[in-house]
Structure formats: structure tokens, C-alpha cells
Image (cartoon, rainbow, N blue to C red):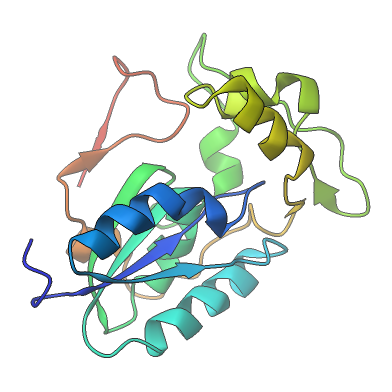
Length: 195
């Protein structure tokens, strides 16, 4: 894509991590001439993360390509209704439809699908089991990097898994870049939601 059409890319991280996980993607996009910003979501509530994302969108001059990973997909599904957002990109991300939430999407995983090792809440915050972090959450990175991520994980507020308030439409229905996606727990052979 020519950076002049929508030269602004806003990257939205998922739960239990922060925006530094986008460093490799950020570097590639910057090298290709894009103006790139990384949202640092507080991950205490979905509403708070949508507001943080909208602040970054509003600060851009011109159209924005909004990219979400994992839980960040739920954030961009809501924030993507901003008129500055020209396109949405979901990377192994939740893409809730009207009446869905992260909670409803993970409530009934497919047989054999990995289930995140979320520990019981501590003061309303969720963490992943450190010992299972690499295998369940960061299987595609080096063991040392996964250990660092497990030890530096960001608490995820229980309010992040709540309902979206799309209003009249779900943003991905009009702005999705790719024609289909999977929820994070769908297996590669499992059903895809076509949009």
C-alpha cells in the first residue's frame, strides 16, 4: 500500500502485554514510510482502552489504518467507528459482533483449543500463570523472551472483557482490510467468520 493514501498506522496491543510487543512491526512500517503510533492501553476497562486509542487516532493528521492484536481487536472494533479510520486490520484478534464480548467469545472454546491460563482475579485484575505463559501465550517467541514477558506482564482488568457499545454498526463490517478472520481460540481448520 502506498503510504500517501492512509500513511498513518495505529497499533493496538492485546491483554497482559504492552505496546512494546509491536517493536518489530513498528520498525518495518517506519522503514516503509508510514507514520506509526503505538497505543499504550491501561487495560483496566474496555471503555478506557477505546478512549486511549481514540486519543491516538485523533492526534493523527489524515486517515488511519487501525491494527489490533488479540484483545486489541475488541478495542479497534469499537474505536474503528471513528471517521478518521480508513481500514481495520485484525492480527490473531477478537472481532466481536453486535451483542458479543471477549467473555462470550472465549466462553465455549472449540474442543482441543488452548485455553488461556488465567489465574483467579486479584483486586479485580487478571494475570496469566507464569509457568504456562510461554506455551499458552507466547509460543512463537524464544523461551527467554517469553520468560521476560511473563515476568513483566501487564494486569488485565476484568472490565476489559465486557460488552462493546458499537451503536448502529460494528466497525469491521465496513472497514475490514482482509475478508475473513478467526478468533484467537479457533484452530486453523476451524470455522472462520466471514465479513
